[in-house]
Length: 325
Image 1 (tube, rainbow, N blue to C red):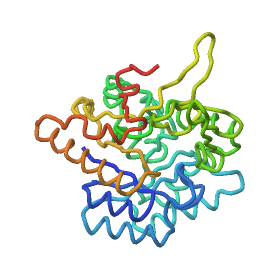
Image 2: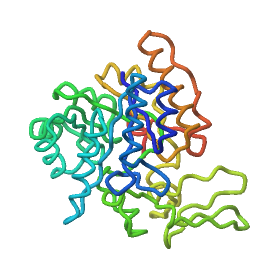
Image 3: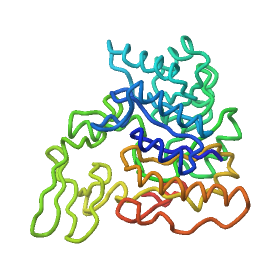
Image 4: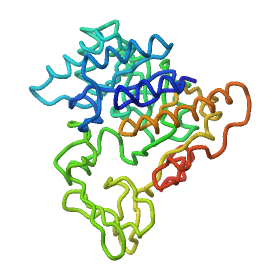
C-alpha cells in the first residue's frame, strides 16, 4: 500500500521523502488548504522545488486545496490549481464541488483526489464524484469501520485512502462548526481549527488551564501531558457526566490494523501531521514504512513504536473498531 505522509514545510517534505514516504501531501501558504497556520506551507516556488526533490527520489507530491472557496474569492483557488499543475504535482486533493468542476474542465490532465473534507462515506456519494468529476481516489472520513470500508470498496471503482496515525477528528469532516463558533475562524473555510492566536494557557494551583477563545476546554494536572486544544476533545458537562464527552484527547494509531485494511482493499495509508516538526515526520514515516513493508512480506508488524509520539502518549483505533464513544 502507498504511504502518504505530511509535509508542512519544505524541510518536512525532504525529511518525509528521505525517511521512505511513497507520497507526500502539502499545501500553499494561504487559505486554500486546511492547515493555514503561520509558518507552515509552501510558496509556488517552494512547491516546485519540493516536487523536483521528491520526483528525483521516486516519491510523489499531492497538493491539498481542500477548503471551500469564499463567494467572490474563487480566483485564489483557481490560481492555486494552476500553480499546482505548473509545479508538476502528481495530484490535487479537493473537496468543493465548484472547484472539482473547475479542475475537471480547465485542468483535465491533473489527477483529482477527493478530500476527507468532502465527507464522502458511502458508495453512492463516491461514485457521484468519480463519474461527474473524474475523481481517481477518495480519502475516507474517520467514522468508518474496517468492514464498512470493505463494503464500500466492493461497490466503487476508485482508490481509497485512509488515515492511520495522528490527530483524530471526531466530527463529520468538512461539516464542523465548533472551532468557528469559539473563534470566528472556520476550519472548512479558513483552514484553521483551534487557531493558535485564540489559545491561551495559564498555570494555576491545580495544574494547567487551556482556553480557546472564551471557553475553558482543559484543566491538566501538574506533570501530566497537555492535549492539543480542540473543542471536540475538550471536557464538557452533559447531564450528570463531566469529562471528554466526544473522545479522549488521544491520537489515532491504526498500525496493527494495516493487514485488515489491506484485505479491505485500501490503496493508501495516510499520516496526519502537517503541523508537526520534521523530526516527528521522519520518525513516524520510518516506522510506518517498516510496517508497510512487513505487511507486504507477511511478517509481524512492529509493536508500539510510536506510542510516545501520540497525543497524550496514548492511542486509539478510533471508529475502525467502533470502540469510539
